[in-house]
Length: 502
Ligand SMILES: [Mn+2]
Image (cartoon, rainbow, N blue to C red; front, side, top):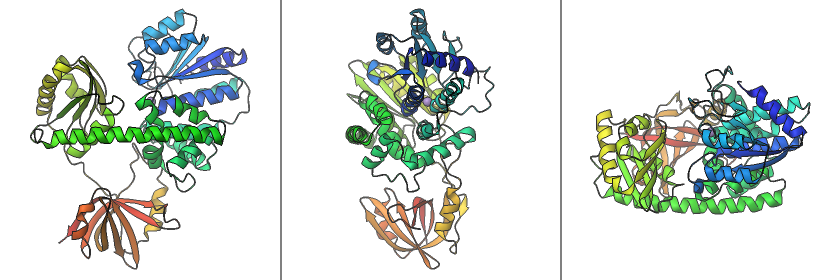
């Protein structure tokens, strides 16, 4: 890996000489876990490390002006940025000029202009010969930590840090193939072992059983959102403190405050979601190919989640903007397959700026240009063609009535961890009897009868179908999962598609 040796040598020297090292990470899960990994490993090796994280309130992500000021106030001789830095030439130049050696660990787009730093770790550098390109920053951080350990001749076991690699990699939606698959698989085992007080406490407040078949989906939907919540609402520091907590007492206090922020984040999100849906439901978007929603005081840390939910619910590319006075910052999300960056390029005249990629992006726009953006956004999608609104649900396994669902689930578990580039398999029951059906808080609960066996099924937000289903036969596509509530061999089918056979 290009610059791996150079960076490890420089860090090892700093550890040996007890230089002050600042590890600076981005505010999302990948940045936080990478920071926790390097801080943890370098401290264990005897280094003097101060971890810092970017905050959204400082304006932009990465090493912004105010962030650099925080770094410089600590007077370090070495700065390591994690999951950011690739586009921070100016601030890195200032840092280097003021006597701080800088090392950038990142996996984002490699800039055309070389970075003014001691070392730049990024597998996407054209000259980097490291064969696997999918590592997230947390994976890179572990690799550097291991290289430093080797130079220092230490016997430190870095495997206990794999839980953090698993979380950062899954949360960053990095591909779960190649090296990442091995890292995440091993990391989930470490996570299940519950050795890290902070994650044990977090699992406690999230009602998550670490030991019982915890998988990548649980990390993506139960753990990562909680670690991201503090950064969305203010500063992410409490999430980092949690990951670095040394004992159960401080960990449980930190986990409790994270849970409060998570509840708060959810409430903000629900409020935004209902305001957004009310605006959509008045009908004006019915015939438009794209959606642009903007409101005063919509929270900048939550607009991305809301845009994502609207885009998938309505199948239309969506921009959700929080206005503050005359300036607006928004998130752009689309249904699967939407080429957001291409569409934004067509809107560039009405935007102050935009960034991101085809699957997720951000925009900056002035309040008086919102209407113009709406027109331009819809025109762009008329020109590009709307992305298909109903992503095909495909079953890769046909479940026979004679199959034992518990045995099939155990077989499918061998394919874990599933996620990006290794999608979990859906199973098809082409003609199954619905023995019982009921609605539960808007969701659908079914008891399916197979030959001599019952299989429970759960259909999120499908509750309204319940009265029409009991006693019928149906085609069901869904995902099998161990039912951790009922334990033992119990499994549950999470319904993705259901159509009654007439
Ligand atoms: Mn990342």
